[in-house]
Length: 79
Image (cartoon, rainbow, N blue to C red; front, side, top):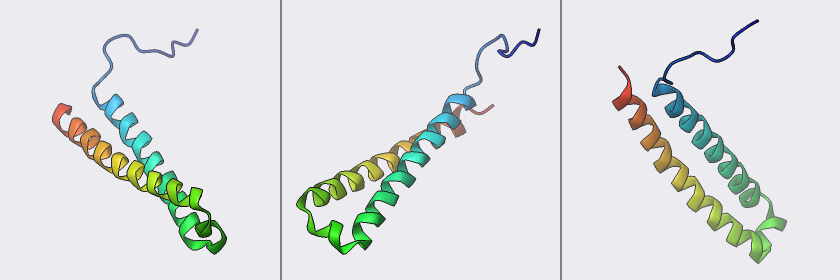
């Protein structure tokens, strides 16, 4: 039988890499939505999309700050 889980503690780099991947994906998707709304004149006219645009920008800034924290976590905990 193949053992898929290694015994022992998880190295601290694994959660850090997961955080970097998670926040990078969130940043890319937020930027994709911002670019979509910004380049389409029909979508820019709707007031709901302006609110959504502001929320995307705030979430993108949050992703950038969390991404920096995740990278700092990886650098500090790396052996």
